[in-house]
Length: 316
Length: 263
Image (cartoon, rainbow over all chains, first blue to last red; front, top):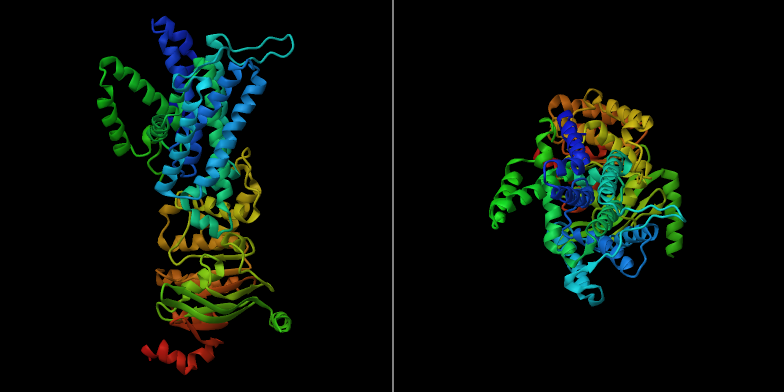
């Protein structure tokens, strides 16, 4: 779907991610390994959101909530000494899916600005739920004592090593990208794109669109949940900040910045968003004053976001 | 009492091979009565035209039949059963598929993918996430056939947004045909077409007659009288006449309400 240039840029970006743990210490900036890991984590959440926003046309303003559900599930289980990844991961992703299905079932009955507001309201509900969990640190957050353990019997398998978790994140991100490329070219993806393009037409052809929108919403919540699982493992710490509404907004901006409806859009968006804020923050404490106008300029003048720059002119 | 009436009705349906029958359809918008007690029978395999001046309630009638809007009272029979409680999507799946007065296609898709999506809509089972639709030979070949049928065979890769107005109307028709409808409803198929385009559209619709049942709203009287087997005339929400074109042409009430302005 993307042009040759877009493909080259996307692959090169993934290669840069792959060599970063080796490259960063060499240039004396080992800290950048963490930055790039976070970029990938947010890219994954943005990828989840892009599924419904970019391909299905649903603007959810509450997707950080599902990142939070995934992260808190891992955090709370680990806090109670349950560190088996075989238990933590499916449970975390499943719970994110259940929350997304319930919230989606209600939100998807509304349209436009109401949909944005109701998804925001649901995510705020979960945010304040997390704040109210005194047992799990309220505002201060919760330490995740150990990373998910994938040992079977005597065969030890964990992701304790910092390089190991980095590459686990990278592999899962690449897998997600691949799975999504299959999905959007498949029957379900066609229906989703059709909903975005002209829902009335699709209904008039006999498609009950609600169930497809709900399935996509749930799936996108689960991808965000997966990103949350990795967050908890990577940071060793979860806090309500992860599901603050500004986080949802940032994920939204990443998708739009990178190019909604493009496979690699979220990766572009997350990379530029986080790197730019990282770099600008080095110059001045008031980096948001520069950052904001840049975002506005991109949205105004680079139609289709960064990914749109690599796209052929003949595409609508 | 009601049961007897139903029995008689069903017999009538079978004898006359009615595909669609509406009885006493009434629809109000606020204080305005868009339709009052409209009745109409559409025979299997016929082309049935609905004509009438602007604001006569033609599009409302279609919206009620397709389930886009709900009637205040009255019943809609289709294939021998009532469909009053079915959603518009369910009616479409049962074969009542329409085109719109303002062409409705998927502008961000290629022409071929428009037809593909229509076939997907007919086939159902659309949760497939793994096999690309492009690799599905069956669906691609069949989608292409529908494009060829309406004369868009050379435009399969063209973005639907880049098609001309006439081509879009043809594309919408191809999509509707791809759902293999039993009752094809056309809302002003000739609107905005050039003389050449509407000539080929008339030929196309005439050719469909053998296998499909068509219900169409049309303003162009030449088209109506050359294509239609039956005509229903609406005027201010009332069906004032119904019958074969020759009878409608000579109907005095119709001439007064509608054609009178011309003669």
